[in-house]
Each structure stands twice: as C-alpha cells, then as structure tokens.
Length: 122
Image 1 (cartoon, rainbow, N blue to C red):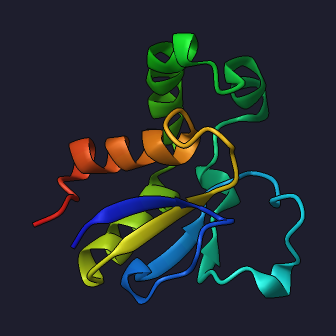
Image 2: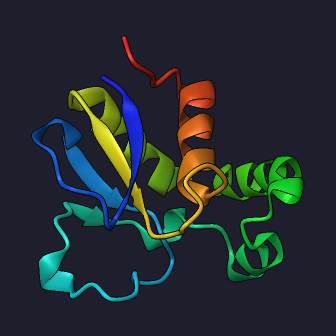
Image 3: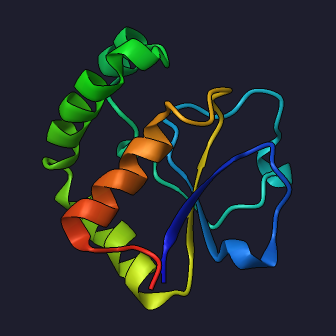
C-alpha cells in the first residue's frame, strides 16, 4: 500500500495502481481519451484562489500546505474515497500537470494523506 505522485505527462506503469487526476482543470495538450486514469477528483484540488495565490512558489510552500490542508479537512467525501482506494489497493498514484515536481498540490495531498490517515509505503 502506498501513495505516489506523477505528472500526467510521465510514462504509465503497471506499478501505478489506481491513477487519479487531482487537478481542478484538465491538463493542457492531452485529450481525455489519451490520459490513462481511473478517476478525476476535481474536488481534491485546492480552491482556485489558493492555486492562483500559490503559483508553485517554493517560498509560499509551507503556507500553501497549511491553507490547502484546512480546505481538505472540509472535503470528507473526497478524503474517504481516496483513503478507501489507497487502503484497498496496492498503490495509489495522484496525477498532476504542474511543471514543478516538488511544489504542487499532489505532493501536498500525498503528505496530507500519509500524515492524517497513515497511508504510506509498508
């Protein structure tokens, strides 16, 4: 069991397990039929205002996570779905389209799930 993150533009692997897009908007340059994913959880993404404020600025990372985690705590239905999938499958891959591989909502969501729900590599 575990959670990993991948850009939507990365190569699909059998080890990805369940693939869930966690962006609020569809990734540029990819047709829906060309993206290998199991679910698109738009509601798992940060609010538009938070996303725009953050703008993948590493200097805002800690504050972004704090604000995003507060938003996530109001999204019980999405969190229940994500944790159920993660606990009932060998792997959960959170997909994102941002260029920044370290400072993005999927990385923050992965950290949140691992810390709040003890979903990590075993």
